[in-house]
Image 1: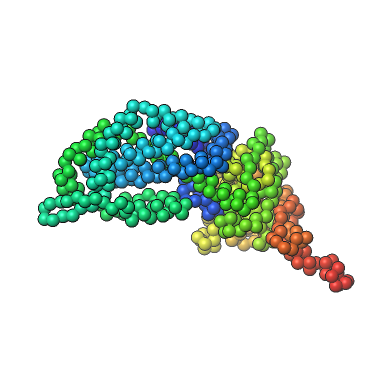
Image 2: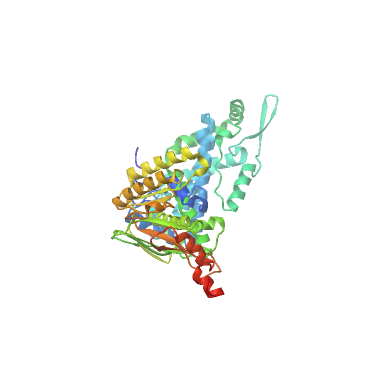
Length: 487
């Protein structure tokens, strides 16, 4: 396949090979926080050059004027995509001829909006320079001039959806309504901040070929002009331009999510890129809780080093273990995608893989869940290495305790030996003597007014969960003695 002539807005050079799986985005609930289609084209793990290049784009998006221009560009790209879908579904040259007039008009509108997207940084400068140059070329001027003649014929008579009246063998074409129901729905969706729907042309009710033939016969001069226009100008349309729909949705989708983050008073920063293998984050937030309108998110520190790369994570049920796991995962993913990260400060090395396994009980019976666990674990083990991040949530929890202890210990030991950064949430106390260190969710009993679970480095033991709860509600023997005398 020939390389596209269009400069990419996501990558400085070739696209990387490693991708983050859709299951990982689902496990971390990023899909619940982000608008639909945000991640369609962006799940690649970046190198340092691309991370820095994307940061420059996100920095520009903090300016409302720039964001407005990018939104205008996305709308133009989506309208072009809608017309392209109709063009691809056309059943005759006459249909293609008339639809191509609108397609060319929307193509030029996209080019003009692209030339107006000026901004700092390598990706934006390269993008703007390309489209500015294109709008100054002779093909652009010739197409614009030709459209002045043929576009009024389309908009005034046909609008790509012929409105007609038949009497006997005669066909009379009348003006289409200014706005169809589909256009009204699309405009309402856009006003609500939703992506513009691209029509499903397979579900449309196309005009019969007999009617199309009749209209062509009734308007021979117009359709001759449409055919001549497509023959001359059709060579300038390259469908590769539609790739910008996914690229623009990535930036604007994350920008809308960042609005929610900052509105909740949560900081966003660009982590320092470390040449030393580490993840050192202060006050990281699980921003996916904002999808449930949870505005009281408790931050936690994250620390992985080459000496201590992998931990078990234990603690009381409902204490925030999964929330902590997601905070680690979303921090790593957003860093690897070139996005700002929700934390106070951070220094991180670049991962070459991010893998997750969270329970999906609703899809399987007990035996099916175990097989799914094993298949996903095997896939992770085949790919993960010392530069990867692996996050496991109660893997093997559906088996018997003895089997779960053995499988959990074996899996964790294999991952630990590779040097991957990772966490393994487990309740299997039989593995407590393993060499792998523990993080434990403990209860801060000094603050009774809000959710106060914090994650600390601590050796797990069989009584720690119960003691955490007793401390929180001041029911330990020592606390009862302070309140009521010796007990």
